[in-house]
Image (cartoon, rainbow, N blue to C red):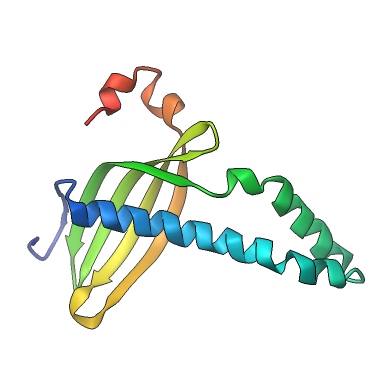
Length: 136
């Protein structure tokens, strides 16, 4: 458990891996909801812009769902709970991407929420083609 104050690196523990999985799961849930709403968008043809937006999302749907690969690094900030800053590797289809997630956790109040989930970029553009630097 961390000390209150600044942001500190933490070991990649099972808890950190679970938080990273949770971030990816929450990201994916948003896009599954959109896919489930497509029939409604098609019924609202008079709202053409909604149908067009929905079709755009479907075309890119395969790139929306992410597969968690591993945690690359993690930091913790203790202030009224635990804020975790996790850099993680995902796959969307054939491409490996790096995302940064920020989660807030208060176990004693049963609170766990993803506050930010942001694409950093393509894994190989960020770290180069040598996978050995990414091996655990």
